[in-house]
Image 1 (cartoon, rainbow, N blue to C red):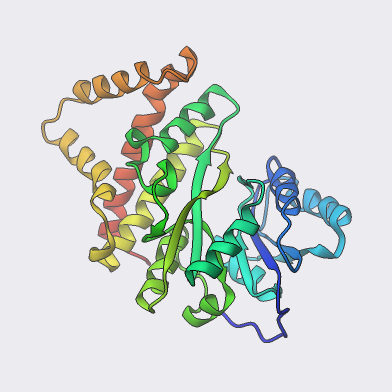
Image 2: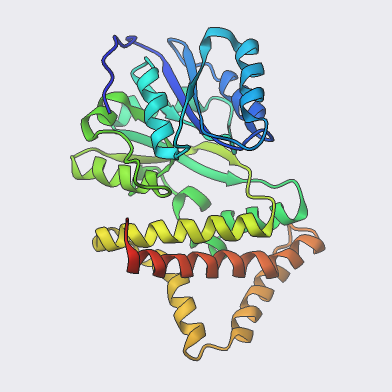
Length: 316
């Protein structure tokens, strides 16, 4: 990745890859333009081939926000490729990644830039706070935000500020993106993991700060959830195959659960654990707790199966 045009000396460039996001795009874009970083801001949207009205929604948003919103075409539709295209069209020294399924909290950009300056980190980020609308989505959000779901990484359940392996989305120094070559297009998922690994290998710091909070809208159907978690597990497995030392113990829990279920662990015992967790989710409605009995096994087993497939196959 290279940026040959002259860069502005101060300000924040937001970059957003989108595809089939007509439902959430407007809210995500409006949340960006509610930010107020010093030096101004711009948003560059990279639109992939979509089967819904994403392009039309983006065009209306372009009229609404004017020159501060740029739209570029992303022919492949790949997330990493879209990010690189958007970054190449941006101009400010700080680059913040946003997704159409996410909404930045008030003051996110100002805080991120401040942390970036104080720590000297290459990339800073915070918490992915899942929030659902339907009872199904609320159950998925519970899985994201609790250790019983995704294993308890700081970006999901919180923790102390400090250096970490990876963060959600990210606020980057452009110079570091250029130094390591940007996002690798061959990584369909797990681009953040892989990029942050290269940043750390090059001597940069990836910094977590719990004050940086981003609302995330989970998938709204069982099929979409299962597909998402299988793919995420696949790419985590592929990354583990490439660099075994980068895989922390919690990434192995769903794959080992799959193996244990095949070789003797009674599935009924696993369901009892899930039922206990659902019964003790006091903040959820009864209907949402029932969905947990489907959602949590889907997250665990889809991720675990995907991980083994990615570990065996690697990146092709």
